[in-house]
Image (cartoon, rainbow, N blue to C red; front, side, top):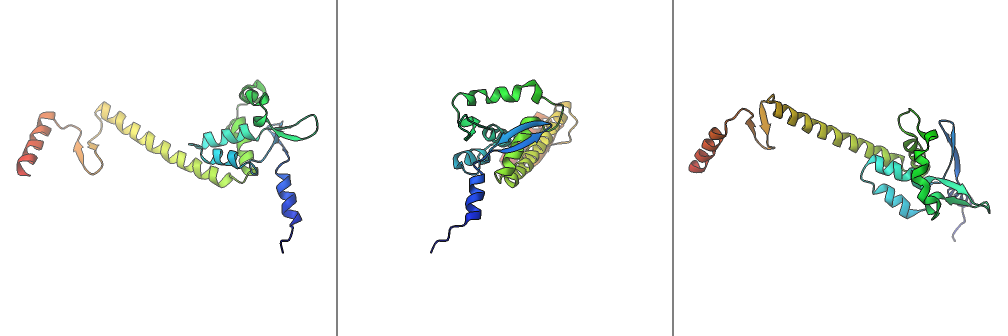
Length: 177
């Protein structure tokens, strides 16, 4: 016998209602992405933390229509075209970090149960940025002639090596092999 769980039903239905949030004194009605599998998957498939959070912000904006029904702005053909303009409003450009759109996106992720995934992606992005910055610093050193060795993964070569000397070493290697 299947027992109907009223608590779970109400919790599920509550996800279909906008939640009022105030961010830096500005009220937002936000919908969870929880019941829209397509939106959840799009956010999860984002290539970066910023992509994921910004898509959540755009997708979580909500309003009540004339009949009192809760609606997602992104689902409305006419209003969805105005989402970009919302974030460009001067009133939302505060001198704060993170920006308003990121703050709203983080709230949408939180009410949608995506906080852990978003934080994991933030960590991955930070690691990738550090690796990229390290490679850029190495390249800059090389261009200035400040590095001691050129690293080629499994072996390195002195940065000051002469091309003729390198060719001579290569020839000797071919002869001995």
